[in-house]
Image (spheres, helix red, strand yellow):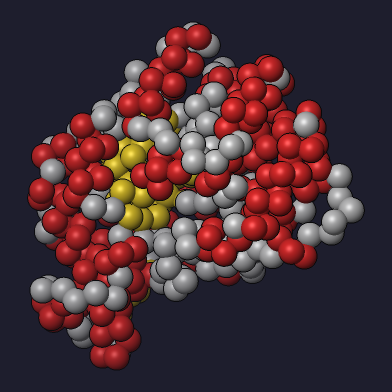
Length: 385
């Protein structure tokens, strides 16, 4: 059964771009103490894969029945932007709405001056952490970037009854930017919407460093920890949890996340299960994998239109075996978004791809389970008693 996410504790967004990965996720969810969000897809993913939210729902529900999973789980309409996308997702039965605010950054807002006046020359304390807005230029920069974001959050809250009646978990995402979210920005956003009566459940800030697809954290781990401590204090102050996006394979920072948040966070891992499918393809049909990789090279510029990537697939050594590509950071990150054409009905990969995975589905499910379990263990999530 799909339900809203818990207010406290650990939840993991697992997601299944393919439609057949959920049995692997269930193996881990049965064993460890976290709330799973098996159904998690963005409109972007649906468009590329030719699926609908109804397909996502059906595929997960079928897996729950087949695997005899009787506990609750979530259904996340991920990175929703427009009113039309939100309404479509709500009508499809989502229990979590992730509002992507990236298109509202650095945009004009009717409440810009009001926000500035509310915070200028004001000081606040978040427990033992002081936050001051005495620098006029600094505050003006924050407001200029985020006033429209704040206005959008309030608009969605007021416009959609399922949101303001708390029938879905409401997440605000401000991570799709190059600028890390500092404590002054985070507090200002949360304070203003809180005073307007908006009650969010999770917020995804932009942390320092790089959270690239399918590879470990890139950056100064101590700087990440300092930021996480501040962000977590603000989240707890306003009564919601932090959400960490592009969270798969960030093994070097998992212990810090568990320690700082005291086991109170949401983390999204969706695309990594697709990479496990690519691994099976590489093992079972190396020639087919080579065709996928060549298309990655051919379509590199197109990938940049939809994803912020730091990888250089052309730097990947040509003498690697197919499975070794999955250990190379540049190749792994590239392959992570190769679903854009591998699962796309407009290309010729789908039939062969699913033929391989269907033939080796037990092996694929176990690979997914092993990989997700590695995440869970590094996050120090306890086993169920």
